[in-house]
Amino acid sequence: MRMGFEPKRLRKEYKNQPVTAYANCKVIKFRSKLEYRWANYLEFLKLAGEIKDWAYESHTFHFDNIGVVSWLIDFTIRNNDDTFEYHECKGHFEKRDVDKLKCLFKERPEVKVTYIFASKPKLSVIKWGYLNRYCERVITNAQTITKKMPTYF
Image (cartoon, rainbow, N blue to C red):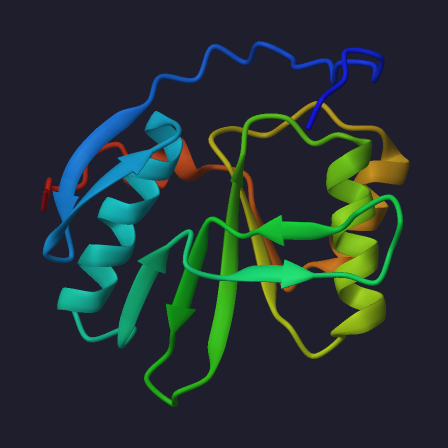
């Protein structure tokens, strides 16, 4: 319960445009067009037999860290060999994203995370280093990949 004395958390405006779609037999409210387009791409991979299944915001990682308590990952992908990997769509890569990656790598180093950017972000050498160290893959051209995809939902 807020008493009015706690500082309000600052929220940045990213100008994301939410998209609501019917996918995987349910209505899904994607937080951005990039997430919607990536879900469409994952559905294409599923229908092509490249992956077994995918789910949107179905898995949360919890950490024993004061700064980062949890991370609701965008996509959980079940591969054909029944292993899992996780995809996170981003427009901006900030310090809190680095902190989440560090916590995940420290507590669950076996987890495979892929970061997806619509286009190549302007990042410092240090942030690129974090991405390369902690991520299985970094996709910097999702807009090109998803641009001419057929729409499945």
